[in-house]
Length: 50
Image 1 (cartoon, rainbow, N blue to C red):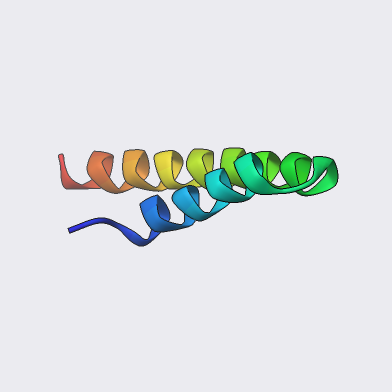
Image 2 (cartoon, helix red, strand yellow):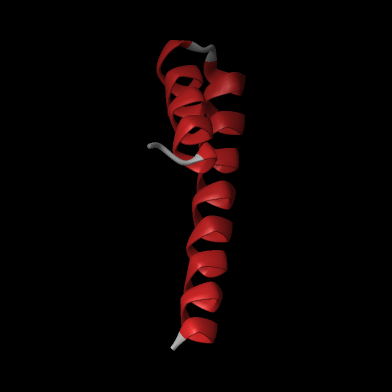
């Protein structure tokens, strides 16, 4: 089962591919922020389990 973050990343990627220039920039920025926040969340969550 895919996570919500993966679905949002796919939405942002599709905006980045099919959108205009301004939409591409915004979508890429949001995708980077979302990806890093998910990575930090999982890293902190897994470190608490260990």
